Length: 161
Image 1 (cartoon, helix red, strand yellow):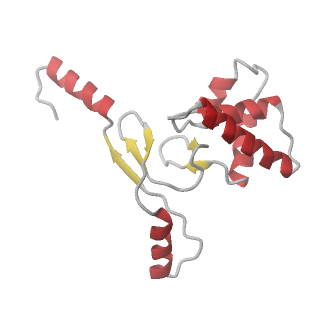
Image 2 (cartoon, helix red, strand yellow; image 1 turned 180 degrees about the horizontal axis):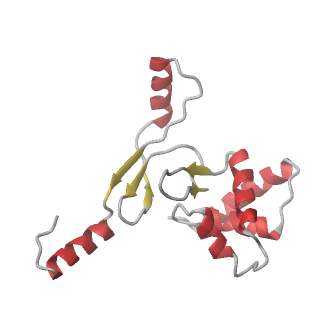
């Protein structure tokens, strides 16, 4: 759960890094940053744009993408790339970590699984690869989609699948 305290602490830390690099912190960029950090989900750039556009109607989607690039360069956002849909972003846990993804609605949920650093080191040692970055995703139907599927099956007289 993303608390207001977490959002403020995280935004302040990122703002310090942006300023330390001598980069501009416009009101639009700050609004995009807040939207990313306050999201309990893993929003796409388009989702963020639609969320902040009412506050800054003259802002373009390019502002969102440029802000995301700045945050990626700072190591303050994790980009999840998908072949068949828009990339999604995590500004709350910016280091690689596992996710579970709903194959129906696209919901993404963070997972905590043991020692990722140890796993990365083991993979690097066993393979000889350098700068190993993990991407560990699990796919299935989320509880909401399961319930909807079961309700639809019940209503149509078909057995649940």
